[in-house]
Every structure is written in C-alpha cells, then in structure tokens.
Image 1 (cartoon, rainbow, N blue to C red):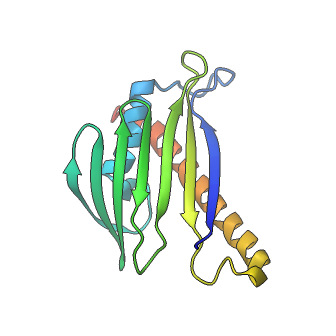
Image 2: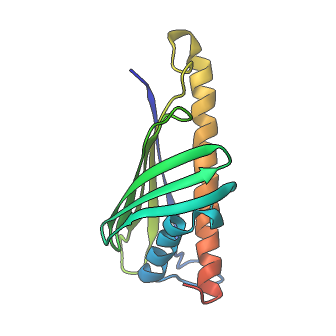
Image 3: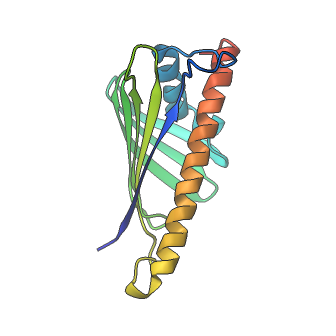
Length: 164
C-alpha cells in the first residue's frame, strides 16, 4: 500500500499591520486562484500545454503537459471558497490531491490554506528508508510552500496591475 505525505500551510493575504501591503478583496483572491487553475503556466515552471476538457461552475477536468509528464486533474470548485484538485496517478507519477481554501476569520482578514496529500514514489517508504522518506517529505513540503507563496505574490501583482 503506498504511503503518503500530508502537508498543510497557511498564507496570510491581508495584513492590517502592514500599511505598505494593499489589501486584496475576497473576489480578487478567488479570481487569482481560478487563474492558477485556468492558466497554470503563469504559476508553474515547465507547463507546455493545458487543455480544459470539462468546465462547469463546480467542476473542471484539465490535462497539462510539463515536458513529457502528462498530468490529469479533476478539479472541484466551491465558488468563492475552495478549489480541490484530484490528480490521477499514471506511470509517470503517483497522483495525489491538493486543496486551496480561502479562510476569513474576521472581515477582510484573508488567508489561503493549502493542503496537499501526495503518494511517496516507488522505492520510498520501505522500512529501511526512513531517512530517505523524511528528506523527500521535507523537500516536497518546501517546494509546495515556495510555489504557493510565489503564486500569492503573482496574484498580488495581478491585482496591483488591474488584471484581477
């Protein structure tokens, strides 16, 4: 049975203690997160092609090519609140899931919770590879965190230039 890495982190969007940081509305944030779904090449390195096979208010099915890697996602939408990706496993990768949830504990105090569940690749997760598991998990978590922080930074730039 494959073992999985679960990782979750929170990114603050609006900071009332920082007057240099222009606030983003919930609607602008949602549009930015949807842009990550619809135009992933702006957020991920190496995206060569994206096709949206199915599109409705609650569901998107998407195929991406990143070099020779083909990624097929089923994306469930709860408009204005959350986006959940289920990535199908293939010969090239183990698949997994990813959720972006907008949280607003107080009016205007926006955060995005990023939650990942990724299967460990073959060969990782054997009883004699605990150190390798920890290294791999830490590497994956750092990559996810960096991608998400960069994505929010890009959304902020899109808001500042009037694109969102």
